[in-house]
Image (cartoon, rainbow, N blue to C red; front, side, top):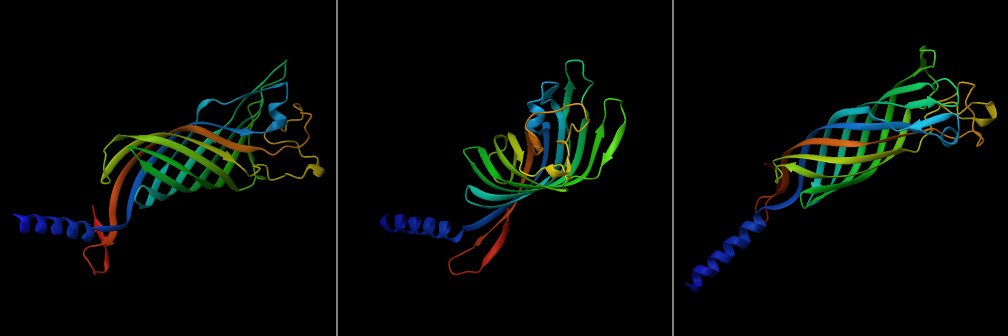
Length: 244
């Protein structure tokens, strides 16, 4: 009996060591839906402009690849995004311009996934593809003088709603993004440029030129599939890739 127990303990120990995992990988389809706007302090302080954050004017879709070790990992995401703004003229002034823009966004996020939830933080590099402005007269015009590369900070968290293992899971969460780059390409105050996006010659603030930073806040939906793991199959063996 004693020898049998010793053999069992040795077998369990050998099995645990033989499956030592170095890293594991996953992929996901993602959709984001929420609110977007352009933060500009001069516009916010303007008494003739109602500054709103409307839900439903921002949508993104794309995918993710994750490189993980234990509960921590790096999530690399590529998303196509469509965003917009909502403004309203006050005190008898006409409606402010409506701004819409679309971009390809690349994320590099540190993610901690534990206890059926996740927390993520990191940078986003947005590549703006086009910016449109509809004036109070309904005329649509394209902007060409904008910074095509946008750097933003990202913070998010969420929970698992489907699945509890690495092979498949569904998650829902919240994400907040704040832009550090001025979306206005003509950002030289000495040139007399008005703060984007309300450069109509009507609205004015007392702060002078202020940068215009795109923001987003909304829901994140993710369907996640495990690809496999990279590890050592047995003592002294070369590391290999194993599918889930």
